[in-house]
Image 1: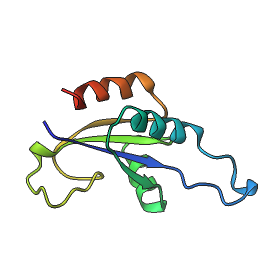
Image 2: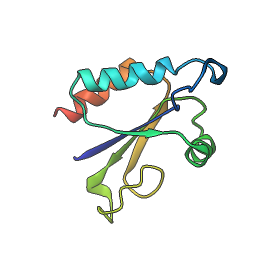
Image 3: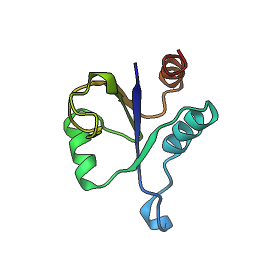
Length: 106
């Protein structure tokens, strides 16, 4: 099984008026990186945030997992649509990250 992991993160604040940085986004990326897991990083924009909200993801980061072996068209790797979608979660979830790391390292 060849997995694609996509992590959608909030944009970094340009000023204090934009609010605090996304600590859960930073922690999620750090754990994946520290464990040697390759992932695609996407900065949320209005369109991707809207699609993810429609799918029930209410907070960042959002982690989506796709099995590339189940894809009909392996040249179009769209994490927001298509076949092969296995699931995902929102927020910093270290237990789920560790479970995914075990799958990736099999």
